[in-house]
Length: 287
Image (tube, rainbow, N blue to C red; front, side):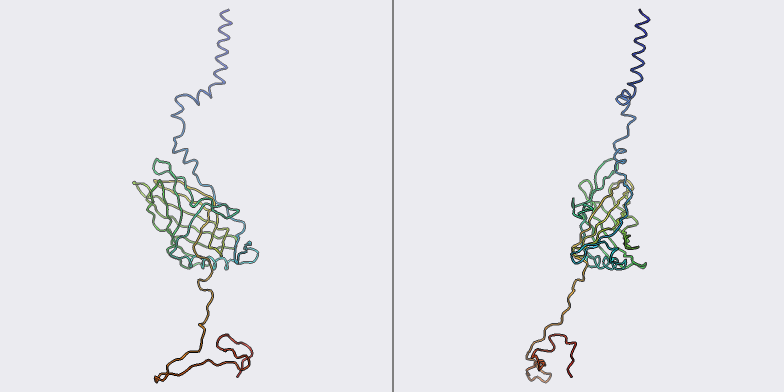
């Protein structure tokens, strides 16, 4: 009888050991020491993913949008972007998290999960100021000096200007990137920020540029983010004074160099009676 009781107890203990060891391990008091720290879990969640290259760039002009590869050249894309940035030099360009299909803003900023020392927080970028636009020495390249407005934890980061390069390699490859700029987000040192922006949408009528971005931060404050964003500029890509007209000449009274007042009239066409100087007459030219 005792052997049967002992055998039953031993069998029950064996089953509990095999089936419940995993549960006991996960819920034991020692699991707190073996589980990853909160900052390690946050770091695993904020690792940026590789950026995706666009298959075709969409360009909007005269309120019509179409893929650039159908009727445009690389030089046209480059010239349009140069005109757009030059028109908006010394101005702020707004940044927003956007929908890649509708090209509309979802938030008025982009969010970057961040670890500032041992404190998990978020960094935000809502605009960038264009400080200088220079034509690059290499073909189809533009050198830009940009100042990103970065805030984190309710305070503004002290960042150096970003020396960025925008280049159009071909009709489907337009990239804006920088070599990295420094931001002071902690008391123990500077953090380096690197930005990559793959452009796939250009609206010349309203001054919008869209594309997928990847931002990485390294240093005492580290983190990263990727997604789709829109760059919204206050001015469009067309010349600032597209219509150049000569002032209209009318009959007036003027003074000659000798001081006598004379009445000056414009010559008129004998057949129509209109002033010849009002319009440009190409044909026929009367002698």
